[in-house]
Length: 234
Image (spheres, rainbow, N blue to C red):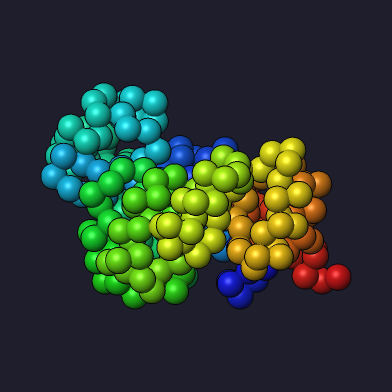
């Protein structure tokens, strides 16, 4: 099942096979390839700015070094030659592009600021906030109950069930693995929407879209978008 107008196709950290992940160029390229939007990751700078980067350090994806949480935003922006965007910069792009954004909050302490930024661009209807941390989802439910809230999990089991219920999530972001199809049948019965990550096989993309997932996150957003368009014509 999907609470969205149709199953979402989201580029994993943008179009990371064509541009450096989580950069504005990567985000824009995913939409150019036909995706509805992107999945991106948010860390917290030392001065509380939500920063769009996957790792908790700068080294892997930039020429700079240091822990994101240990550096003020101005230093991050300067040392990376402005290649690492803030969430505000990323959502300014999304608002102009009409893009959906799945924001994975990887660090606590930015929930209120993220909600403020989302509202400032009037993007509430096109944002999914996700996290592996149930406490972050709980906090989003408190400060921004209008947002789609999805708990991230590697697998569906008793612990995830408890966390899902307790954190007031509305859906799940689940990793695609060998047992997912059985889980999807169970979640369909419970009317729990699921976004699946990271799906790159064309056959698997087609299968999951036909299964009626709420959305999928792919390193090949152009391929996924083309398959969905083909299914739409059927």
